[in-house]
Length: 146
Image 1 (cartoon, rainbow, N blue to C red):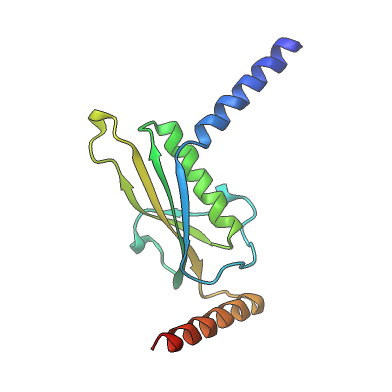
Image 2 (image 1 turned 30 degrees about the vertical axis):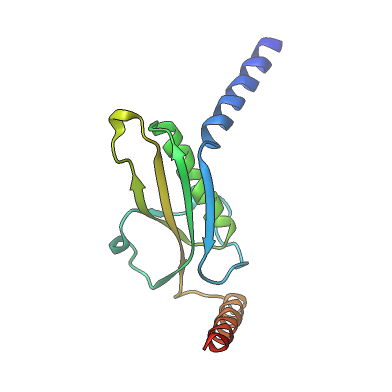
């Protein structure tokens, strides 16, 4: 029994190490604190080209994970990490905009850059209120800059 517990802990630790590699940053570009509609990030659709998105949408944020090793398991775990983050911020989908791997032969790191997609054709009253306040605040800030 102790042997199985030990093996389970080792496997869990290795999985955590794979999924937490790379440096992450986030740039909010739209309203934040939107209600979460997708509970599990793995259920969040992932697009690799803007033409795949067939509904009206807006970008509410840009997230990147930098310095990833060129390892398919790490990339897969990182995409799931991005999906979970996007879902927790109220996004409906994830658009992978850039996948940098300039020269995989010399071991250069990979960077994933994504947009958090918010669909605009099924907004709740709460979301409309948050977006309206964001737009008003942005307009006020822009008028002060002039």
